[in-house]
Image (tube, rainbow, N blue to C red; front, side, top):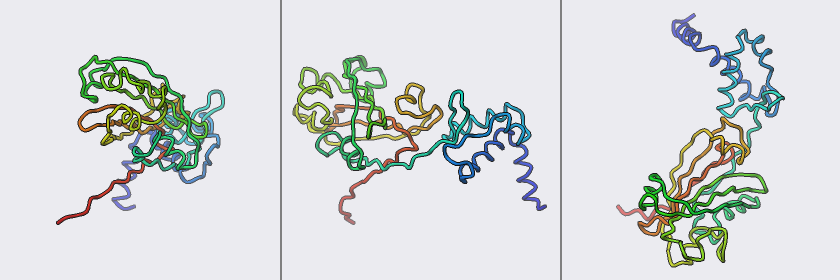
Length: 261
């Protein structure tokens, strides 16, 4: 055996048993040897087949659950997750009339719907920084569950300064003459021209309060979008948007102005 191969073997043997087992099971899933939706062997069977104790088996299954490869079903066992083909979600439809979510959904051939709960609250320090307002200022908070063909696709919590919308017909995003029209149209109705939208995207594990509404298991990864609508330097809305990372692929189209040397 070559020195390089011996070194690789030593390093592999030095890895914890649960990581080595996770590698084996992952390879079987990724290769298709374990089909989506199929039941994983019991803990006792995995212990016997791989010559390890119960603890490494449980740890290996936790690793695969965190990676979104398997999911536990209470009273039934652990199953290979059926991984959906990610849908393309275009980020750039804010100029469209009506709801950007509705426009994007119909462009994908699915019927959009959503539910919303709005209430007056007060800006935390972090929220005040995002909106450029004093901490404690009143804001309208709206919590959404968005659906496509009846299936949950994303969650959103948005905040709008009451100094901007308070006392107007659009103070409640889902009530009044422009209900469900989107931030751009609603702000335009009260004489505010939205000039740009900013988005910061990150990935993180799903929170327990998000997993059930999204219909995904704990341990899944989500895409978290911090979005803000701006009228010049005035932030008129900011939102936290959450969607399952294995279901969607964010697609950005950026216009390039004519090049001048």
